[in-house]
Structures are given as structure tokens and as C-alpha cells.
Image: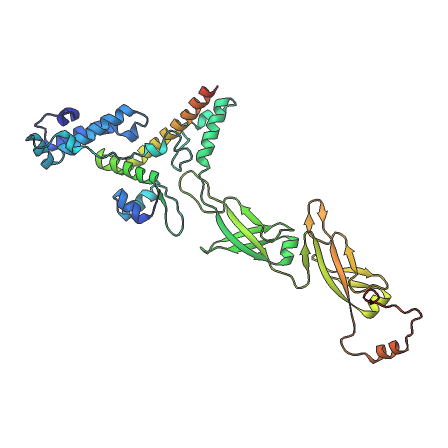
Length: 91
Length: 302
């Protein structure tokens, strides 16, 4: 599913200014399509994660970038691990 | 349903601040996005979050303490987590995925290094969108090749190198000149579709250039050396004696560049009478009595 900016703001419960900061910080990379940005469900879930980190877990703005970078690396590692396991099983 | 105080590990008399601290301590350990793949952590987090929803709201906590509601009433609707979009292969190629955690493993020559490289390549393949443009060029630029500057809608410009012999409707791909993308991905490509404006007298068929060349009556009858335009400049063309309208002369290699050489230019002759009536010519022809009569319409006689 693809969301417009207005849709995304409502679902993620963030204001426009905050969203711009998150994109500026490269916490979110929506598709920069014309005439409007397009947000995916992954973008939405990631916004929810950012809110959890800041609101529930007390992570400050500097920390969010660190956490997201590590989370992205973990997913990179998990995906490559899944592939390695699949190829080992296939032999 | 477990007792929310037990789940958070706080006393029934705990202050709101203690509850918040207890929740935060557990959430840091158990948040599903910080434990991708750990089902147990996810289940425990759900309990913890439900307990926190109940106890952090003074109204609900009071009702729970007095027995008006039980813990199940506060159960949280299932939320989707980021890991559901990023993990287990679903996220391969996601713009967020980062290969720096295993890039060093991709250096070797074995099977695993190959796998790591492929996976890293997949993440990198997430690139910016391609942008489409149209560019109209002159006939001669299409035949001879040229560099054209394309002005973009955003005010920028793009130098497009047109290879000699480009065809109408052909699309040139300019690597990395498309839209950029945030994150690790590379920009997309610019795709430039070429249209070719027609020429005043050259016409192209495949790799050959066709042209109609007007000649005078005396050039046609007596033969001549005639300056003839080609896409790369004029050349001298020998018109043999007695060349008629419709005769085609071939200029080898003066056509469009192709693999291993060039096409030809085909010159079609067109005999032109003087544009004004010419008394001398009329007088001469009136006295001209050819010995054998040549009927150009003999095929039409029935």
C-alpha cells in the first residue's frame, strides 16, 4: 500500500515539521516521486519505531540515528544469514 | 491474563514514575524491533505494553485496583512492527537495508563471499527513478553525430552525446543522470528519446541517403561533373552522357555510418527544362529530325 504525505501524517501521528526533520536526518527515505512523495508501509512502520524509541524508550534525537543505523545493519545481516542458511540447506 | 503489577515487576503501591521507569527498562530489552526474530521477546513485550497501558492511565489503574475491570480489557490491538517489513527476505532490496555489517566478508573467493556480494548488490540496486526526456535534433546531427545540450525542467542541463547514425525514436540512456535517492542507492538514469527533424532535400532509408538532383537538359544529354550535396559536404558527381530523369547514381560510402562502414548516397536525377521558354532551343528542335523515331509511349500503345 502506498500513502500520500497527508495520509502518512495522519497514520503515523506526526506533524509535517517533524516529518521533514526525520527525512532530513535520513531516518526515513520515502520515494521522492512527483508531484508528491510516496510512503510505503515499511516507512509507516519505521515511523512507528521512531515514535516508540523517542516516546516510550526515552531515546533522544541523537540516539535515534544510532539505533536506526544498527537496526538497518541487523536486518542486512539477518537477510544475508537467511540466504546463507538457505543455500547451505540446498546442498 | 497475568497481573500487570507482576508483569512490570512493581509493587501495588508503586508511584506513576516507578511504573514508567519499570516499563521503559523492560521495553528497551523487549521491543520487537530491537529483537527481530525473537518470538518470545515479542510475546513478553505485548504483555508489558498491555500492563503499562493499564497502569500508566490513573483512571484505568484505579478501576483495575477496585476490581471494576480486569487486565484483559486493556489488551492492545496488534501493532505492526518495522521488522515485519525488513526481515526474513522481505526487506531484501529495501532502501533502508545496510550491508556494512558484512561487507568485509564479501572479499574472499569462496561460495559465501559470492553470497555476501550478491546480497550487498541487491541492497544497492534500490536506486533512484529513471527520468524521461525528449530531444529533437537536426537530420545532419543524426547522421553525423553531435553533442546537444538538453535543458531540464528544473533549469539544469544535460549534455547528450548523439552517436552518428542514430535512428528516429531511439532512446539514449545516460547512466546516473536520473533522479537521486536518499540512502545508499545510486541515482537513476536519464532516458532521452530522440526525434529527428526532416531535411530539406535529404531523405534517409536505413543506412542510405536519398536525394533528388535537378540537372539541365544539356547536362543530361552531354554528361557533366556536378557539385552534389552529401551529409558531410559537397562532392563532384560524374553524370554520364545521356542520363535520363529517374536514373540513380550511387555515391559509395556517403550514407549513414553503420557497423563496419557507411551506407551510400543514392542520387536520383531529374531533368529540368529551362524555366522560361527558350527561343533558341525551340528553333533548334524545330529543325531537329532524328533518323530513327523513339516513341517513349510505345509500352502504352494498345
